[in-house]
Length: 423
Image (cartoon, rainbow, N blue to C red; front, side, top):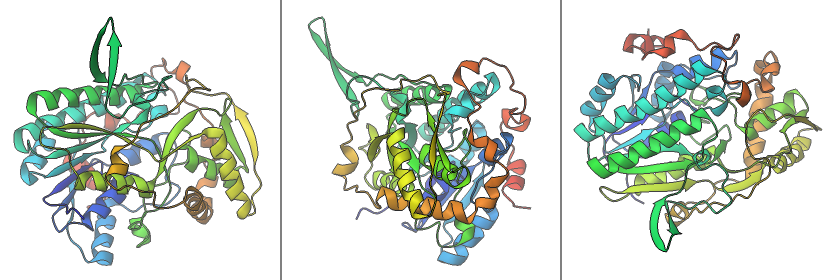
């Protein structure tokens, strides 16, 4: 098994994926795994009157518990805002990492479509943050491996197979290879497309070693590390803005005894469990691209339409004595409801990737956690129904869901430390 060597920085290490990934990496290396985060996801989720269904500890408590329960002290917190070029530069210069994982994005498409302020915040945070990391790596760690989280949503739903990397095009009797066309359908997805093109240019002019992950929709509540102690659990968002479809379906089944089907329910996407997302990224870090190489990886495991997923969740719900109905709601997005969807994904299987758990087993784990913490969600049932509608996003500031003023500028270190529970 390849070994992870040298410091690794996880930008966005307090998040749904970032926290379990940071713990997983810290268990597989003796070098420092550095969490860089401004704790803004917690503020942004609260700004839409929601919260994690699973209670999550403050960062200070998380780190203390990790050390106590694992005996390891190589998980380090560096407070910082990815939009702050000086702070990003300080941390990268300090650790000179062998690898950087970039998860410090505003990660919700519906959040980016609430109104103009949310769209602007999303694109500034995501594009500027990515650029800050690029430039600091070029200065201080030019040989580091940058693993950046993108989205399968960058591709949209083209009527041809989505290639993994370049596509060869013939026109007018001539052939050439191009990056597969991007067709993002939200301001969030467009920010990820900008990130991809900025990384391509950085690879060309600075020779940065990059893995650009096009990830499918992630579901699940657990990894091996999050089950060690309650203080190490990761968040579970279930509202219509921050939740992902399978996680949302399980909460809907428990709280409403019905599943909300957007439109015809034939929107088809790629999926993978939280276990598999963590395992896949670890595998990519252990098997980096060559020096100066840019690598695109389509990171998904299964392809389903949303109605088929709902039927699967309904089947598992019956095991817990829950019979569910289906409620059709108008699709708040602007997207094709019926379409061709086929994705090439060769790289991860070639490295030895395999599914860790059956999809229904992961859905059962979600049910167990949702039932356990059901009371936390009872007061927020109304947030399950969609309120961010793509065609209404021209509004400047949607009342009732105003963007927190403090996040419209980079958060200072002392502010982040307070949010993280360090005094």
